[in-house]
Amino acid sequence: MKFYDKFVFCVACILLFYIYRPYAPLKQQFSSSDSIIPMPTASQSPCITISNIGSLKEYMPLDGLYSPGASNIAFSPDDTIVAASDNNQNILFWNTGSGRQLGMLKSDNNSDFPSNGLAFSPDGLLIASSNGMSLTLRSVNDLLNHKKIQAQNLQPHTAFIRNIKFSPDGVIIASRGDQGIVQLWDRSIDQVSATFQGDTGGPGDIIFSPDGETLASSEISFGDLGRIKLWDVKTKTTTVSLIGNAPLAFSPDGNTLAFSSGGENSHINLYNIKGQKVDRLLGNQLGELTAFAFSHDGMLLVSGDVWDKMKFWDVETGKLLVTKDYNGISALAFNFRGNMLASAQQGSGLNNFVYLWSVNK
Image 1 (cartoon, rainbow, N blue to C red):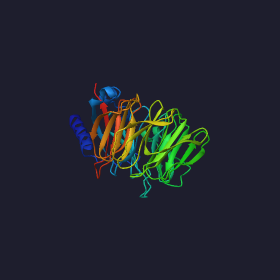
Image 2: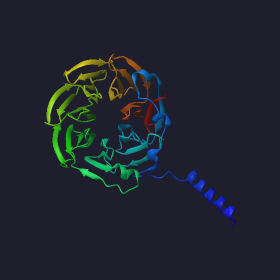
Image 3: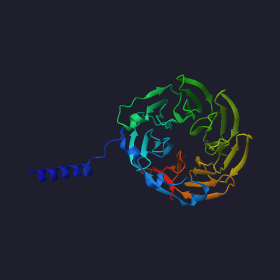
Image 4: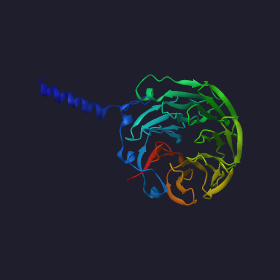
């Protein structure tokens, strides 16, 4: 075979491989090169604020969620990766620039009980996830570079883990179990430093204040009124107890805690941390609220509900600015730069997506 014929044959083989190659299983499969592919619209877009919220556009649907919805969304601190945990206890990772799916951590827990906690460490080196009653730490670098994944399993809960959060300094990992028990794992001593009875259990939320001094937790009591508790992380004591429900969100300055009033016709409560009072209410008869997210400047609050609405509120005036109709919002998150919003759509079958939103220049 002549050189030219060999060259043509090799090129044809390469093309056929990429066209007809099977879609490889994603269990613990990652690509390091994808983590740096830029998406100009997202990387160059301005922070999402009240002044430009009218220009907010959905620019990228991220697929791959084959169970009913994503319960948690998290951005890596450098904003290059967005991860979502589904209700089959799997975690999917996408590159925020290209939208390409980087891989999946497939659960080996065959239980029907949901266990879908997810959080990146503040330094971006670790990702914490739950698998049944176990809390697991993994190296993000190992995930992205095809290395053997070494998982560190921390002391298990007595019930399936629903929520996970790192403290802002990365020292404490807070986890909330299905029975409403909140556990603090202190990484400096590698053991549990405190255990609280937060609420009655089931779906809910936990969140640290931006300064890391306060931890809030609550359940989602659909149709009922629940209880929200705030703890002093240092003294391990309860400081405030409120009537209301998850979801929860702290404003970036830590002065305001947003939570649901609860019930089928709920509204949004804005609790003043320093004044220790609810000083503003947003909306009325919003349905059962499922997710909150504050914008980077704290002036905009995004809410999601089971009535298929994603709403954008002016925190200062209480005015509803924009409404987006989607198929059941189950989770919301702003990236660290504040110029990208991720929303999880809870559909059925293959209609489960994480959407990325941004404002064009």
